[in-house]
Image (cartoon, rainbow, N blue to C red; front, side, top):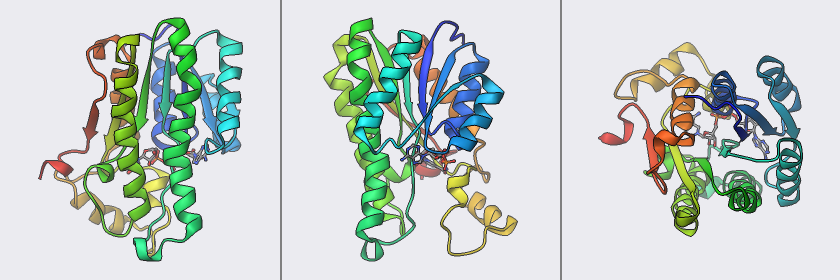
Length: 247
Ligand SMILES: NC(=O)c1ccc[n+]([C@@H]2O[C@H](COP(=O)([O-])OP(=O)(O)OC[C@H]3O[C@@H](n4cnc5c(N)ncnc54)[C@H](O)[C@@H]3O)[C@@H](O)[C@H]2O)c1
Protein backbone atom coordinates (compact mmCIF):
# COMPACT_ATOMS: atom_id res chain seq x y z
CA UNK A 1 0.00 0.00 0.00
CA UNK A 2 1.20 3.48 -0.82
CA UNK A 3 0.15 6.40 1.36
CA UNK A 4 2.44 8.99 -0.22
CA UNK A 5 0.94 12.47 0.08
CA UNK A 6 -1.62 11.23 2.64
CA UNK A 7 -2.02 12.34 6.25
CA UNK A 8 -3.32 10.27 9.18
CA UNK A 9 -4.03 11.32 12.74
CA UNK A 10 -3.46 8.39 15.10
CA UNK A 11 -4.60 8.73 18.70
CA UNK A 12 -2.77 6.48 21.13
CA UNK A 13 0.10 6.56 18.64
CA UNK A 14 2.73 6.54 21.39
CA UNK A 15 2.29 2.88 22.35
CA UNK A 16 1.06 -0.56 21.39
CA UNK A 17 -1.18 -0.83 18.32
CA UNK A 18 -1.34 2.94 17.79
CA UNK A 19 2.47 3.10 17.61
CA UNK A 20 2.52 0.07 15.29
CA UNK A 21 0.02 1.89 13.05
CA UNK A 22 2.26 4.98 12.99
CA UNK A 23 5.22 2.79 11.98
CA UNK A 24 3.32 0.97 9.22
CA UNK A 25 1.71 4.17 7.88
CA UNK A 26 4.96 6.13 7.69
CA UNK A 27 6.77 3.10 6.21
CA UNK A 28 4.11 3.18 3.45
CA UNK A 29 4.97 6.82 2.70
CA UNK A 30 2.27 8.63 4.73
CA UNK A 31 2.62 11.50 7.18
CA UNK A 32 1.40 10.52 10.65
CA UNK A 33 0.28 12.82 13.44
CA UNK A 34 0.41 11.22 16.89
CA UNK A 35 -2.22 12.43 19.35
CA UNK A 36 -1.35 11.05 22.79
CA UNK A 37 -1.06 12.15 26.40
CA UNK A 38 2.28 10.33 26.88
CA UNK A 39 4.75 12.89 25.54
CA UNK A 40 7.92 10.86 26.22
CA UNK A 41 6.77 7.74 24.41
CA UNK A 42 5.26 9.81 21.60
CA UNK A 43 8.60 11.61 21.09
CA UNK A 44 10.40 8.27 20.78
CA UNK A 45 7.99 7.07 18.08
CA UNK A 46 8.28 10.47 16.39
CA UNK A 47 12.11 10.31 16.33
CA UNK A 48 11.85 6.92 14.66
CA UNK A 49 9.14 7.75 12.10
CA UNK A 50 9.04 11.52 11.53
CA UNK A 51 5.50 11.68 12.90
CA UNK A 52 4.30 15.00 14.32
CA UNK A 53 3.24 14.90 17.99
CA UNK A 54 0.26 16.69 19.51
CA UNK A 55 0.06 15.90 23.20
CA UNK A 56 -3.12 16.01 25.23
CA UNK A 57 -6.17 14.19 26.50
CA UNK A 58 -8.73 12.89 23.98
CA UNK A 59 -11.40 12.88 26.70
CA UNK A 60 -11.31 16.70 26.46
CA UNK A 61 -13.38 17.85 23.46
CA UNK A 62 -11.63 21.24 23.26
CA UNK A 63 -8.27 19.51 22.97
CA UNK A 64 -9.65 17.29 20.17
CA UNK A 65 -10.91 20.34 18.25
CA UNK A 66 -7.51 22.01 18.73
CA UNK A 67 -5.60 18.91 17.58
CA UNK A 68 -7.58 18.71 14.34
CA UNK A 69 -7.08 22.45 13.73
CA UNK A 70 -3.33 22.09 14.24
CA UNK A 71 -3.05 19.14 11.86
CA UNK A 72 -5.15 20.84 9.16
CA UNK A 73 -3.14 24.06 9.64
CA UNK A 74 0.11 22.20 9.05
CA UNK A 75 -0.81 19.65 6.36
CA UNK A 76 -3.96 21.11 4.77
CA UNK A 77 -5.91 17.84 4.88
CA UNK A 78 -6.59 14.71 6.96
CA UNK A 79 -7.14 11.54 4.97
CA UNK A 80 -7.48 9.17 7.90
CA UNK A 81 -8.30 9.29 11.59
CA UNK A 82 -7.37 6.24 13.68
CA UNK A 83 -8.79 6.21 17.21
CA UNK A 84 -6.47 3.83 19.08
CA UNK A 85 -6.21 5.68 22.43
CA UNK A 86 -7.82 3.54 25.09
CA UNK A 87 -7.73 2.55 28.76
CA UNK A 88 -8.95 -0.44 30.76
CA UNK A 89 -10.21 -0.98 34.31
CA UNK A 90 -10.06 -4.57 35.47
CA UNK A 91 -13.05 -4.88 37.81
CA UNK A 92 -16.50 -6.40 37.98
CA UNK A 93 -19.32 -3.85 37.68
CA UNK A 94 -20.08 -4.16 41.39
CA UNK A 95 -16.50 -3.09 42.20
CA UNK A 96 -16.20 -0.33 39.57
CA UNK A 97 -15.82 3.14 41.08
CA UNK A 98 -17.36 6.28 39.56
CA UNK A 99 -13.83 7.39 38.69
CA UNK A 100 -12.98 4.20 36.81
CA UNK A 101 -16.32 4.19 34.98
CA UNK A 102 -15.83 7.84 34.00
CA UNK A 103 -12.20 7.32 32.95
CA UNK A 104 -12.95 4.31 30.73
CA UNK A 105 -16.06 5.80 29.13
CA UNK A 106 -14.33 9.21 28.86
CA UNK A 107 -11.34 7.96 26.88
CA UNK A 108 -12.76 5.00 24.96
CA UNK A 109 -16.19 6.37 24.05
CA UNK A 110 -16.13 10.17 24.43
CA UNK A 111 -12.55 10.42 23.14
CA UNK A 112 -13.45 8.46 20.02
CA UNK A 113 -16.60 10.53 19.49
CA UNK A 114 -14.88 13.90 20.05
CA UNK A 115 -12.09 13.11 17.60
CA UNK A 116 -14.57 11.90 14.96
CA UNK A 117 -16.83 14.91 15.41
CA UNK A 118 -13.86 17.27 15.13
CA UNK A 119 -12.48 15.71 11.93
CA UNK A 120 -15.72 15.15 9.99
CA UNK A 121 -16.20 18.76 8.73
CA UNK A 122 -12.67 18.69 7.30
CA UNK A 123 -13.33 15.35 5.58
CA UNK A 124 -16.60 16.71 4.16
CA UNK A 125 -14.84 19.81 2.89
CA UNK A 126 -12.02 17.88 1.21
CA UNK A 127 -14.44 15.37 -0.34
CA UNK A 128 -13.84 12.27 1.76
CA UNK A 129 -11.74 10.39 4.27
CA UNK A 130 -11.55 7.25 6.38
CA UNK A 131 -12.01 6.68 10.10
CA UNK A 132 -10.88 3.53 11.88
CA UNK A 133 -11.96 3.08 15.48
CA UNK A 134 -10.52 0.53 17.91
CA UNK A 135 -13.24 -1.79 19.15
CA UNK A 136 -12.45 -5.12 20.79
CA UNK A 137 -13.63 -8.70 21.02
CA UNK A 138 -14.97 -7.51 24.40
CA UNK A 139 -17.30 -5.12 22.58
CA UNK A 140 -18.84 -8.11 20.84
CA UNK A 141 -18.96 -10.72 23.60
CA UNK A 142 -18.81 -10.19 27.35
CA UNK A 143 -15.87 -10.94 29.64
CA UNK A 144 -15.81 -11.28 33.43
CA UNK A 145 -13.96 -8.69 35.47
CA UNK A 146 -13.75 -5.86 32.89
CA UNK A 147 -17.30 -4.50 32.86
CA UNK A 148 -16.68 -0.83 32.07
CA UNK A 149 -14.26 -1.77 29.29
CA UNK A 150 -16.78 -4.19 27.70
CA UNK A 151 -19.52 -1.52 27.88
CA UNK A 152 -17.21 1.08 26.33
CA UNK A 153 -16.20 -1.11 23.41
CA UNK A 154 -19.81 -2.10 22.72
CA UNK A 155 -20.54 1.63 22.47
CA UNK A 156 -17.61 2.14 20.08
CA UNK A 157 -18.95 -0.64 17.86
CA UNK A 158 -22.39 0.91 17.47
CA UNK A 159 -21.01 4.45 17.23
CA UNK A 160 -18.99 3.15 14.28
CA UNK A 161 -22.05 1.69 12.55
CA UNK A 162 -24.23 4.79 13.15
CA UNK A 163 -21.53 7.21 11.99
CA UNK A 164 -20.91 5.12 8.87
CA UNK A 165 -24.60 5.51 7.97
CA UNK A 166 -24.59 9.26 8.70
CA UNK A 167 -21.81 9.77 6.14
CA UNK A 168 -22.30 6.89 3.69
CA UNK A 169 -22.94 9.15 0.71
CA UNK A 170 -20.07 11.54 1.46
CA UNK A 171 -17.12 9.30 0.55
CA UNK A 172 -16.33 9.07 4.28
CA UNK A 173 -15.89 5.45 5.39
CA UNK A 174 -16.09 4.59 9.09
CA UNK A 175 -15.00 1.13 10.24
CA UNK A 176 -13.62 -0.52 13.36
CA UNK A 177 -10.96 -3.13 14.06
CA UNK A 178 -11.80 -5.46 16.91
CA UNK A 179 -8.59 -7.08 18.17
CA UNK A 180 -8.33 -10.13 20.40
CA UNK A 181 -5.36 -10.64 22.76
CA UNK A 182 -2.55 -8.37 21.57
CA UNK A 183 0.84 -8.14 23.25
CA UNK A 184 0.92 -4.46 24.30
CA UNK A 185 1.42 -2.57 27.58
CA UNK A 186 -2.39 -2.54 28.03
CA UNK A 187 -2.58 -6.34 27.96
CA UNK A 188 -0.15 -6.45 30.87
CA UNK A 189 -1.60 -3.51 32.81
CA UNK A 190 -3.73 -3.46 35.98
CA UNK A 191 -3.49 -7.22 36.63
CA UNK A 192 -3.90 -8.60 40.16
CA UNK A 193 -1.25 -11.26 39.56
CA UNK A 194 2.36 -10.56 38.53
CA UNK A 195 2.95 -10.47 34.77
CA UNK A 196 5.21 -13.49 34.30
CA UNK A 197 6.08 -15.56 31.23
CA UNK A 198 3.80 -18.21 32.68
CA UNK A 199 0.84 -15.77 32.78
CA UNK A 200 1.51 -14.67 29.19
CA UNK A 201 1.71 -18.33 28.15
CA UNK A 202 -1.63 -19.06 29.87
CA UNK A 203 -3.22 -16.07 28.11
CA UNK A 204 -1.90 -17.26 24.77
CA UNK A 205 -3.39 -20.70 25.42
CA UNK A 206 -6.87 -19.12 25.61
CA UNK A 207 -6.56 -18.17 21.91
CA UNK A 208 -7.37 -20.79 19.23
CA UNK A 209 -4.07 -20.05 17.42
CA UNK A 210 -2.36 -20.37 20.84
CA UNK A 211 -0.42 -17.15 20.58
CA UNK A 212 -0.85 -13.44 21.29
CA UNK A 213 -0.92 -11.01 18.37
CA UNK A 214 1.99 -8.75 17.57
CA UNK A 215 0.66 -5.12 17.38
CA UNK A 216 1.84 -4.99 13.76
CA UNK A 217 -0.67 -7.71 12.84
CA UNK A 218 -3.50 -5.35 13.80
CA UNK A 219 -1.87 -2.26 12.26
CA UNK A 220 -1.76 -4.02 8.88
CA UNK A 221 -5.56 -4.39 8.98
CA UNK A 222 -5.93 -0.72 9.98
CA UNK A 223 -3.90 0.29 6.91
CA UNK A 224 -6.03 -1.92 4.69
CA UNK A 225 -9.20 -0.20 6.00
CA UNK A 226 -7.59 3.20 5.41
CA UNK A 227 -6.68 2.26 1.83
CA UNK A 228 -8.63 2.35 -1.42
CA UNK A 229 -8.52 -1.45 -1.36
CA UNK A 230 -11.31 -1.26 1.23
CA UNK A 231 -13.39 1.14 -0.90
CA UNK A 232 -16.66 -0.83 -0.47
CA UNK A 233 -16.32 -1.16 3.31
CA UNK A 234 -18.11 1.11 5.74
CA UNK A 235 -19.84 0.34 9.03
CA UNK A 236 -17.83 -2.90 9.31
CA UNK A 237 -16.45 -4.33 12.53
CA UNK A 238 -13.38 -6.27 11.48
CA UNK A 239 -12.45 -8.90 14.04
CA UNK A 240 -8.73 -9.71 14.22
CA UNK A 241 -8.61 -12.32 16.98
CA UNK A 242 -7.03 -15.58 15.75
CA UNK A 243 -10.40 -17.32 16.06
CA UNK A 244 -11.24 -16.20 19.61
CA UNK A 245 -14.87 -15.28 18.86
CA UNK A 246 -15.31 -17.99 16.21
CA UNK A 247 -16.16 -20.47 19.00
N1 LIG B 1 -4.10 -5.00 23.90
C1 LIG B 1 -5.18 -5.66 23.61
O1 LIG B 1 -5.18 -6.90 23.78
C2 LIG B 1 -6.41 -4.99 23.05
C3 LIG B 1 -7.43 -5.81 22.55
C4 LIG B 1 -8.56 -5.21 21.96
C5 LIG B 1 -8.64 -3.84 21.85
N2 LIG B 1 -7.63 -3.07 22.34
C6 LIG B 1 -7.78 -1.62 22.13
O2 LIG B 1 -6.78 -1.20 21.22
C7 LIG B 1 -6.44 0.17 21.46
C8 LIG B 1 -4.94 0.28 21.63
O3 LIG B 1 -4.58 -0.47 22.80
P1 LIG B 1 -3.08 -0.92 23.15
O4 LIG B 1 -3.20 -2.29 23.70
O5 LIG B 1 -2.20 -0.64 22.01
O6 LIG B 1 -2.83 0.05 24.40
P2 LIG B 1 -1.56 0.83 24.95
O7 LIG B 1 -1.83 1.00 26.40
O8 LIG B 1 -0.29 0.19 24.52
O9 LIG B 1 -1.66 2.25 24.20
C9 LIG B 1 -2.72 3.13 24.45
C10 LIG B 1 -2.23 4.54 24.16
O10 LIG B 1 -3.33 5.42 24.39
C11 LIG B 1 -2.85 6.57 25.05
N3 LIG B 1 -3.93 7.18 25.80
C12 LIG B 1 -4.65 6.63 26.81
N4 LIG B 1 -5.53 7.51 27.28
C13 LIG B 1 -5.39 8.65 26.55
C14 LIG B 1 -6.03 9.90 26.58
N5 LIG B 1 -7.00 10.19 27.46
N6 LIG B 1 -5.64 10.85 25.68
C15 LIG B 1 -4.65 10.59 24.79
N7 LIG B 1 -4.00 9.40 24.74
C16 LIG B 1 -4.37 8.45 25.61
C17 LIG B 1 -1.74 6.04 25.97
O11 LIG B 1 -0.87 7.07 26.40
C18 LIG B 1 -1.10 5.00 25.08
O12 LIG B 1 -0.05 5.58 24.32
C19 LIG B 1 -7.24 0.57 22.70
O13 LIG B 1 -8.41 1.25 22.30
C20 LIG B 1 -7.59 -0.74 23.34
O14 LIG B 1 -8.75 -0.65 24.12
C21 LIG B 1 -6.52 -3.60 22.95
